[in-house]
Amino acid sequence: MELWIPITLVAAFCQNLRSALQKHLKSQLTTAGATYVRFFYAWPFAVFYLWGLNHWGGLAFPQPNGVFLLYCVLGGTTQILSTALMVWMFSFRNFAVGTTYSKTEIVQVAFLGLILLGDTISLTAAIAIAISVVGIMAMSVAQTHVSVSSLITGMTEKATLIGLASGAFLGASVVFFRGAALSLNHDNVVMAAAFALALGIVLQTIAMGIYLLFRERETLTAVVRNWRWALPVGVAGVMGSIAWFTAFTMQNAAYVRALGQIELVFTFIASIFFFKEKTTLMEFFGIVSIVTGILIIVLLD
Image 1: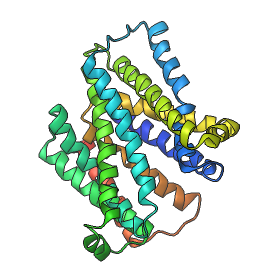
Image 2: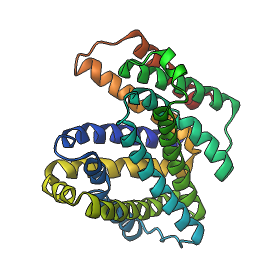
Image 3: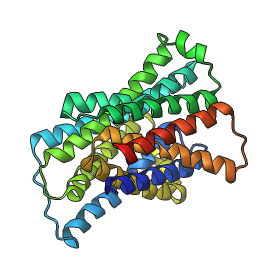
Image 4: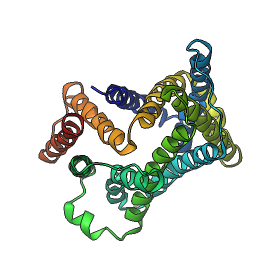
């Protein structure tokens, strides 16, 4: 088994854990505040991890260049924009349709990776990704109670376009951060990934901090006041980010994101066995499609 596969599984698990912990904060903070927690409480651990690789691991720090800095800025900016668009989309009456279309992120990662970095995917992988996307959208349809006809008729609506844009920006952030790590031309992918992560998360912390300072100053106070719940979110988030960045540096981002959808499988299993929730036929179809796509990538490609 290639190393990027278990690393991606760890990333998906940590992201799932972070999301679960973050739910509690949504009642204590604004949406922007709950998002900012991911960066504010994560950057010290990201920097410490980078320092540890150098101090204890004996890995030399990379030499940053202009391309690296540009990719980091673009990666951080597009990730924040993706979140902002998602929040904006929720203000529309038909936001559920837009949410479903935002799930096409994997396809957009594949296209952007090809255009920006020259990352190609095999026909087998393309089929696997297509199957997974169908599954992801089926899960979204089942959970938001959107009809298939609504998806078709709502393709040109504002919420849909915002959802697609949100997915595109999220996909772009993945590709930009992969490009940042690769542009360092470092001998060790773990150090390259850690360097890109540390700078990226520090820039995002500063950028969102400035925004909150001028637009939601009271939210900054709330972020600090709720540190008992926020700190675990930051720790789970940075652990997931370390794994994501390492996997992205090792492998085509489209493959990583496709395998990362196993997070939905984790959530599905938890909903059945821990929360005793009932499963619809559409959800079952979605999970089977996602798992099928993942197995094709891992076993056949």
